[in-house]
Image (cartoon, rainbow, N blue to C red; front, top):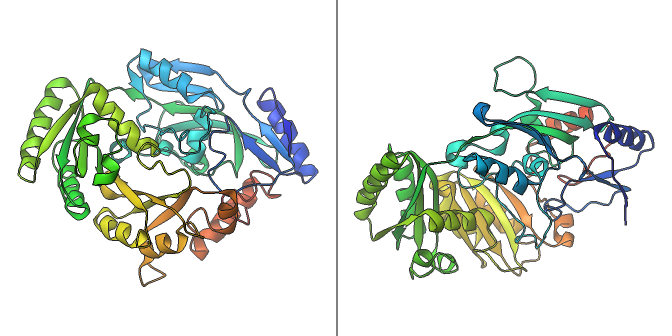
Length: 410
């Protein structure tokens, strides 16, 4: 088992990574450790525990900006924002139940994985709210990027580069994020009994309407039945859901208009406050709706209009799944496949043309032996893979940071 090193501050992180590079020692970066099951398994010389890099150093509610140590627990930040009726608008999911991991996730971990929940269709991904950072590269060099406001400037946007890099380029030590006001009123409109293709069409029409939708999802009947929200779990049919947020008069008007629009397609219902929040939490966190602990869990990003066909092809040998982001995000649970369903899932994205680019698939959960055998993340085209390798060479030429977590070479 790798020895654990625990730096007390950013300066000590730089000292340790400088030493590790000089000695060719590999390092696993750990903040809260809540996502240890995401990515390829690693075998490193040391484990760098960054948990001391926590605490909110700046929060200006009137300026909608917050700065914190990268290992600050996300729950602490969300509680602070809630007191001011503000939020992280990208709605970070909590995969604790998915990974059967009780460790609390950190703000740095969420940004490093670029995680976003159902509101992504309106608010964007985590990287779109990532304003600034302080970090240490695999060379042991401390660097800064960004600041407290969004600016159009020349140079590289390193925040977007670090978002989704899973700690393979640098160790984040401090991050600055944009926060936004929480909605005054939230309603969710439910449409019952649609098959997958009809539901995607209905969601697309809702998304194209003037109703300013903040989330769209479709749960096939067996998955909807697992919801703890009574209107959904007791529906006895597939459930298509759309969320509307904003000032109360506007929300009430838009909700009534959407109910009229969807009322021509089938039975409709409406969720308020607690029930609405509970449903979207289930959809974001995955595990309540796909609870088979032994199944491989896949996340597919695809063109929404192709979603139903891709889902059917990926589940040709069994399994189940549901749709988020109006059909642009597919969550699949595939049991009993030696390759975790990789051939079917990735084949569903390309069809008969291996060069087709209709989306990408990530194995979000699977046993270590499976994650070591297959590509956890979508393999990149040769030109993209070469670019990624050059970026890795720039930040971590000795390949000491989280080696192999994303791809075998780095």
